[in-house]
Amino acid sequence: MLQTLNIAHRGGAGLWPENTVFAFASAAKSGFHGAELDVQLTKDERLAVFHDFRLKPDLCRDSAGNWLRNGKRQPAIHDLTLAELQRFDVGRPRPHSAYARRHPDVSACDGERIPSLSQVIAAVRPLEDFRLFIELKTSLEDPSLSAEPEAVAEAVIAELRAEAFIARAILVGFDWRGLTHAKRIAPEIICWFTTKQRSRAGATDIKAGGGEGWFCAADRASADAVAAARKAGLSFGVWTVDDPAEMKRLIALGADAICTDRPDRLQALL
View 1 (cartoon, rainbow, N blue to C red):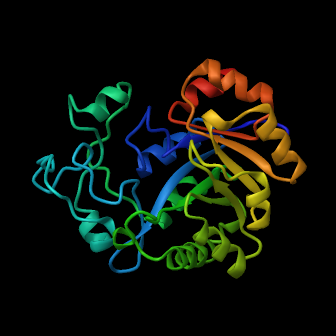
View 2 (cartoon, one colour; view 1 turned 120 degrees about the horizontal axis):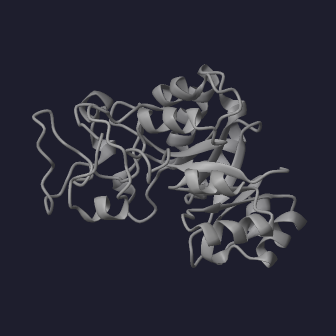
């Protein structure tokens, strides 16, 4: 890649309500190169776009407009149908919450619902160069919270093929089982393997797993890491960077993509 790609994390969570159709459509219209999103398999085997494994009280209001109660154990996304999930309004963060304080510039859009993957694809399809970085969201710590990684991979591949969108998608994720399965059933899909902050995994492991890219935590993004990725023939992306000085450092390193809650800041630098 010749230019660092500007990837709006969860559609641009510092600008719009995260993982909503409004956010993804806004990101596409703003001229960013793509967006990252999280997909989970619901109880009725649909693909819902939501980050947390359980409904998040700081983001979700019920059909009566009431915020979900903090401290109460909320249902898992995997234990609800898509129709049940879409009853919740996720168009603004709960006022005065820790989440709202971390994202003070979010433009609310009341009435936004938890979308399906197909709804997100429909929102960004008109922008022909806009890409989706799709995280296969499965739980390594508590498998009861999510579907099996292979099942999520199969559902995403089937959806991308049905929507004729596979060429504009890159799969990412911390649970590499889903990514390696995706490569087995759809060799044409591009996969960037994600690593955590303290992970020792690197370019050699990703190449051995069949990946085309390394989606690296910012604290591990160094000249040596980029060199290792290049030696292995991998693209090199970084998540999640909101500080302009850090963005400049990564651009200078030659990062192929930067995932950010504030794609407006990155756009000003590119």
